[in-house]
Length: 354
Image (cartoon, rainbow, N blue to C red; front, side, top):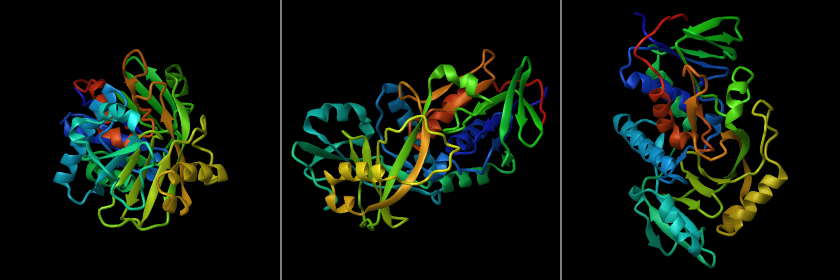
């Protein structure tokens, strides 16, 4: 009997961790990762890479706890991984304090404080603050490359190869490639990030209602001081992240531009992005708001219930989707990968053909 074969479509942080999860479980399976571009070059390249111990639902809190533990074990085994623990502060209006405590994991150990921990961040009237544990950020592009390097050569990466068609068959799935080749596998895991409307899988995903939303983060030309915390603004669903390794701050706010095309080249920040971000940040850190002059723009896939979409898309369970991370791809990637691999039957195989 031949080994089960799995093709992972997408070499971002989720796709790399799906491949890593299969190998970590010791599954006797052949795995190949295919990406239309390069490892970590889509949403992973532009990600803020922030993890903090919060979840808006019980499932997301469980996934957050799993991922936090996974990243902790990774950093313990590989101290050179580009993952940087840092202090955290949470700010919210006093009437939403109970909501904050419900959303954050017990491991966060939220502790009330008089100020968020950076002199440039102030509490407006009616706001309260806590410090907490479990916060870290990563260079997601560099981490994806590091994971891929560790998987090679046992797991081949086919970069610059687009999947143009998926043909489910009784004994597997045939993938049509832009290079003119066909791959036949027992299972396919789709981890395409925001490319949810690609023709090869658009119809399979359509019933699940995922949409693509623009993600905007501003860069603040001010060097964070030693021990500067990440400040999470709960009411606004925004955060201020010190990127000490890059020498500036990042401010992410919730942009409400929907149904954007990830294939359309970004034309950068618009005046309304700067105005929206500065308007939110000025309430808490007017000095930093004035220094929001650049940033990054991309998009991510969002689900109707704001929970990751991890499920089989075909009746035979051979095509599994792993994504719809709602802007939390890095934070939840280990748990998304584990859920996706749980759906695969890696005990038998009918064919193996690269």
